[in-house]
Amino acid sequence: MSTLESLTLTNESTKRSFSGRIFFLDASAGRVLSANPDGSDLTVVIPGGLKHPDGLVVDPPRGHLYWTNMGNPVKNDGSIFRSDLDGGNISVIVPPGGTFTPKQLQIESTKQKLYWCDREGMRVMRCSLDGSDIETLVETGRTEADRRDQTRWCVGIAIDPENGKVYWTQKGRDNAGEGAIFRAGIDIPAGETAATRTDIELLFASLPEPIDLDLDPTSRMLYWTDRGDPPRGNTVNRASMNSSADSPAAPQILITHLMEGIGLALDLKGRRMFFTDLAGSVYSANFDGSNEKMLAAGQGNLTGICFVE
Image 1 (tube, rainbow, N blue to C red):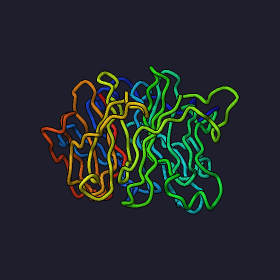
Image 2 (cartoon, rainbow, N blue to C red; image 1 turned 120 degrees about the horizontal axis):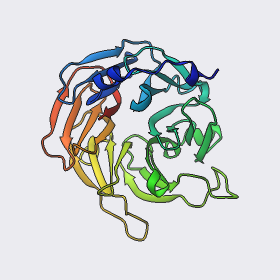
Image 3 (cartoon, rainbow, N blue to C red; image 1 turned 120 degrees about the vertical axis):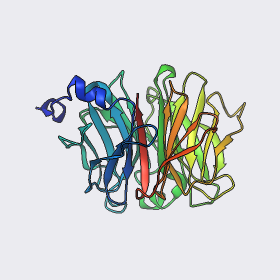
Image 4 (spheres, helix red, strand yellow; image 1 turned 90 degrees about the vertical axis):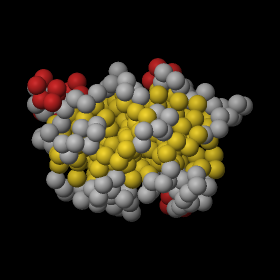
C-alpha cells in the first residue's frame, strides 16, 4: 500500500474548520503554525523537529499539508513530508536524498502533482502526490563546481497549468544583483532533456535575490519576494506575466522594509497577499501593496506560507 493510500483523509467538518486559514513555517524551530487571515487564533500545528522546512502547500480536498525539508545543504538529504491539516499522520513523500535542498513547493491539483525547486540540486522538479514518478524538469548544473555557482540555484516556483508554464527564480550570490526569473513549458519538449531544453525564457534579470513566487492568472501578474538589500531588495514585487525578451515588463515594488522576505501566498478571491520574513513576521496587504498589516511577529525564522480559502 502506498503512503497516500495508508493515510486517513480528514473528515468534512475538520476541513471546514481549516478554511480561511494561513499556514506558515518556522525554519529555526522546525515548526508549522496556522492562524486566521487577520492573525488571530495563532496555533502551533507541528511543534518542532522538522529539518529546516522551507516550502509549504495545502491540499484541502484531501485534507493534507505538504512541506519541504531543506536538511543539510552539503549532505544531499532534502525531503518532502505530508500530514493532515491538524498535524497528525506525518508521512514521508520524498525520502531524504530524493531531492537535494528543496525550497518552495506548489501543487497542481488537476494532474495531482507537486512541483518544487531544488536549490543546491540546481533543478526544477515534480512528483505525484504520493511521491511516485519523481521527474527533473529543468537542470541548471550538475558538478560540484556548478553547485558553488549560486546563479544556478533554483529557489521559488509557480505553476500556470492553464497555459502550460512553470516559473522559477534563481537567486544568485547574496546582494550581487544576479537574481533572475525564468519561464518554460510545464513539460520537457519532445527529444530534449532537462539540461538541454530550448524553451527556457529569461523574464527578469539583475534582481537582488528573488525568492518565492505566486501567480494571479486573472490579471496575468507574477508576484515575488526578494531578500536582497534595499532599495530593490527586502521587498514584495510584481510584473506582468506577459513579459518576454522582446517585450520586457518593468517590475513594480509593492512592499518595502522586510527583514529578508521569503514566503508569499495569494488569496485570489480576496485580492490580498500574505508574506513572511526571516525576522519572524507575517504580513498581509492588498494586491497593490495597500493596507499592509503585520499579523504576527517574533515567531522564529519564517519561510514558506500558504492560504486555504
